[in-house]
Length: 191
Image (tube, rainbow, N blue to C red; front, side):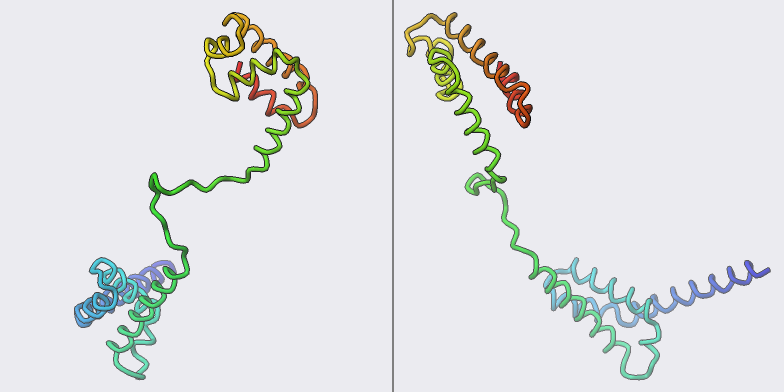
């Protein structure tokens, strides 16, 4: 019995809410839309403002019947406040910049790169000069095996062999040291 009574009461409330909003829109919707469009300069944004204004009227029906002024005045004030709030919120956000080829990407913290390069330089110093020269030609100067062979004056097969054993020596040197797992993994990929 109580559930049925509550359901009927709720249904009447929904019906009265619909009547209120429909009546407000029919009577004041055109003026609200024109006002919001004049302030925003955008029809779609103005429609959003009208919708938000009517939602606030639905949430605060007592403000419409308190006798302190006209309903239209209250609705126009609410619409103006919504537009002002949106403008202020947009002004607080940083300016968005379109990504293009001319804009340089923001780099992450380069500290890891510095540490890794220091780590690699130290490791290279511990290799033999022959192994160090081959790695410098191939990995740092970006030369092919044939180009490195010509530059160093050795056969291409020797360049391949030395690079293989140089990388193996680097992995073996640092495999069990703490904090070097990432670097060792990178070196294994390079092989």
